[in-house]
Length: 308
Image (cartoon, rainbow, N blue to C red):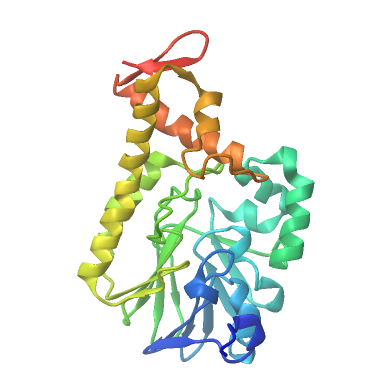
């Protein structure tokens, strides 16, 4: 009888794939949340890591020798291995920098201050969370020369304010982070998230000159551009699907924002969690703002939305 084995059972035996100087270490279930996929770049002068998901804790010396960490964005699941690299230089897009440097900055980016203590306890318990007050900021277009390989940052916000895609040259490997092409679709439910920015970022992503695309979660590695573009189109379509569901609910009857939140646009009906109501509220509010601006929805002084 076979037995399922997780990465945590096999330190040092994490599955990987290599593209020249770039290695991808796969998290459990191909990096499905709460895990992620770890990218490492071996320059002739510097060893770099992109983000540090849970799987980073099971790679061993090859990860723990990293001298540079470039974060594509800041969330708890992308900081889960930072505690193993106390002396590494950590670089974060300037818009996400406060979230990396302190818990106060992190919870402000989430926008869940009322659940701060419970959230902190969960992150410390499940993700080895520790802030990095030494983290440094970078901007769109920033480059890091590692020796025979170079990292270039493309600021593609929406998921977080600082979310960036990291391209390794000349290998042409793009780490797309949480533009992860999962069936769940884009997530823009934090206080620092933006639906409008996400739309622009998704349109810009195919312009990045990559030959390989690595997602933080679930999908893993794409080496075929047509396959990547098909899955990207399906991911983008989730935005219109959500919009159509909102319109269908309002077609049934006018509703308040709270009533729409109760129906759950992102999560299954009845799904609960520390962040769920806030995330649903912010997500639905952003779609309603677009629909109001287009004249497809109206709202009265009582906060009741109806079709325009």
